[in-house]
Length: 536
Image (tube, rainbow, N blue to C red; front, side, top):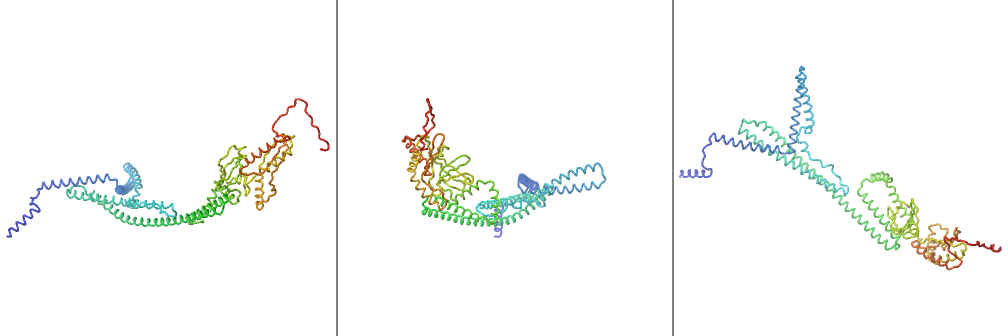
């Protein structure tokens, strides 16, 4: 029974582990060791080629560090050798050697200075996180984009820092594998000279591991600093958004109040000119309030604002003199009330005359619509143009207002020449009656308007009846008639009265309209009979 148990155990062992093999011969063991050695060397060669091709900033930095250390060591040796040669008796050989060493010393000194940035640590620049610039302070809505960009830049730099860590870990894995292969080669072939490479690689691995530990700890601190900075910027952005929303609410409320106020004005002010002026004033006050609210919302130091505006206004007053004068002119026009929308103005500047109706009075200019007037007919020969008159012209140019205040009428005159032998008294009488007939309505209107203006102005002559004047001219007697007419339609009444005067003079036998003529006498010139003494 025991025999069968032992036999069963032997069969199970054979089935699990296979049949026992005979031991390898010494030749086979040598072949196996050489095969393994070749395999290890091939793998080592691949790793070395991979490290040689690797453009890792860690390898470059470490190589620079080692070059710096080697250059310093060589420089110390050269200086020591130079000191030894200088203490010995001079000779040509020592002199030549000294000169060669001094040249080498200069080259090594330049190399040390060039690689000095590496210092005692090969990874100073790599372990230090990149600077994202000065931390922005969000004080207005425009800087929100700056804050978001700063956060994005911080996160990108942190990602780059983490990538450095991953790259360093991969590099350490390769070097550790290289160390293991060096050890395998030395184990398989103790005669190979890999101890120096092994020590160098072990030193390199140690340096890289120390750098990795520093990098990991620095990354943790860097991440916490980014979280703190991001929280601070986000809080400032939220504050600015809240502040901006409140400001928008106030601005919208001001616009609504201004709109309602304009509706009330439109309801109670029926005069279009007064409504237009009131509408402009409300708009100006509303815009001014909004600008002041925005300025005081985002400027903490009002004194600083006053100082800046003081210096800025000094320079702008010179560079933008006309612009500021136009603003001042607008203020004078609005406050003084000399010009209103709808008034008819005559502006003379540099020999040019423009006459039109005021369409708009803005901060910088007066907008006129040029009408067909006597000036248009006799001088400009153009009409219907939109004319922009800078507000500063009220200080430098002649501006006449045909419809100032409540006056809507102006005096217009018609001159007609009659011969010397015409009955000039009858001509003056006829002209006056015609003018009185056609201008009676404007005469009554003007009389009422002048009575209203007595409280504002000192009026000397308030005669509103048509005026007739006769003047002796070289070619006859000029009958000049003046009458009141609508300021916006002077040509219409002028045309009507002119035609009526011509018809009236032509109907009279003792009135002859004078025009350029010549008299040719073929006989004796007739003599005039002197009047009787009693008529003289």
